[in-house]
Image 1 (cartoon, one colour):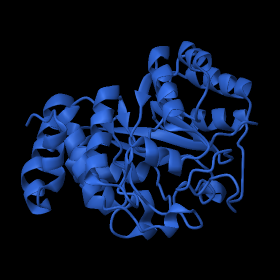
Image 2 (cartoon, helix red, strand yellow; image 1 turned 30 degrees about the horizontal axis):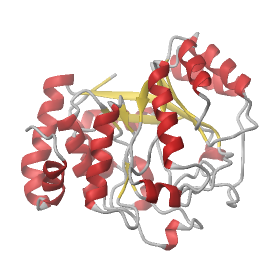
Image 3 (cartoon, one colour; image 1 turned 90 degrees about the vertical axis):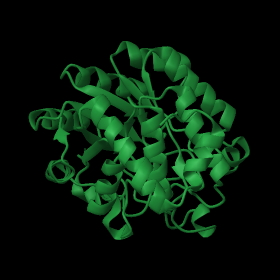
Length: 323
């Protein structure tokens, strides 16, 4: 199934879901098996700071929100990486808010010590200068995660008042030029999001040649301005995007940490994870944040993720091979 134009993407986004589920989704799963051997990629994940200077209208960690703030030391982050390695993880995903006081030199030290363990490292801590991305690459960071969130310039600028679309895209290009792989993607079905904009989002991911699509349906965070405009995004529209991305980009990694119909189960919902894996997603994460802090890394409400046992169960139930 070849998909190259916006019209073709829109046709699939508009197809009756019953037909999409019986034709497009099986093809996406078949293609993944053919190209990648039905492998389920596991990664350790740690949100090392929930302090953020930005005021994105959809994020529960936006500056000024009532969430209890924390900042994990470099030593404790590296200790978590040691534990992840001992448990058998070969990948680590480090994520934070844009925390200007964490210290760039602390990030450099963290990266250097974790890379010494031989772990594949994905990093997501916001916008930096091009030369800083280049230093991350020189230190061995394989992948930098910088989501464009929404491809419509006007919408991006309204929902992300602390930056702007052109600045974000320049940062994204700087990541690519640094030599690191780029992970990027969108929020699906936020209030006001149109199918035309969603098609543009998908095509932008293809254009950017991303390595990983950390896509997710819109999940309202209490107390944020966007939550007042509307409720959660459609999980089945998100599944459409996952399948379309798999067909358009057979080698891309796609987040399977997706919600189901019961929001209280968060991103570790069996239904949501299995539906995503069946649609062509292939990555799950084990959260290494201490239990006392999990609720404070609140980009969205009920950001529940589980550990290695959950990932193993999802691999078994989906018939995939865990790596």
